[in-house]
Image (cartoon, rainbow over all chains, first blue to last red; front, side, top):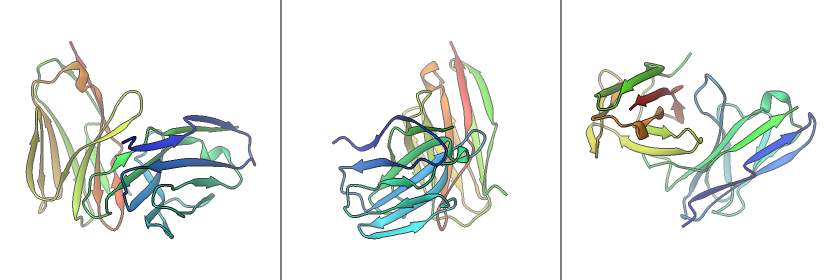
Length: 113
Length: 106
């Protein structure tokens, strides 16, 4: 099993550009989530999904869109990148939300100029 | 307002020392997780606790639900334990502490 994979590993964007961060898992996990990690702050939840076709907002959803058309994939879209979105983004999955081990992807480092 | 507070923020230890990292939280939870973030950035789940104590190798995690407190202990610390340790609690969503950066010196 590859576990949770994320692409790209690093991306530089200009303000106003759009892009999609890819996340995939091959463990047949129902629950997937996106976090951002900023210096001096804990991981913050952006969006999550409890199964294909079901998504919901987390703590910091503004400026991001998600969709979940398959169990395996959970892409995160930046519609119009802003410098405040410079961060490290982690995708995670677990069998279910409640009390299950979270498996994290390797992260995507995003720099918005 | 931080739902999860960790202490200390930074910790330097000599190889072989016994280490304790503390986590206090303010929300009702169904589970608490301890995570390890390697210097390269990858995050690995170490423990999931809802009560009592768990042990894995040299790592021990305890939780006191009444006091809303958890501790992560590392016995006989080793330089390869150098990492950031993150406490996360599951309430209506996951809330994360800012992490404890541990450096173990040979």
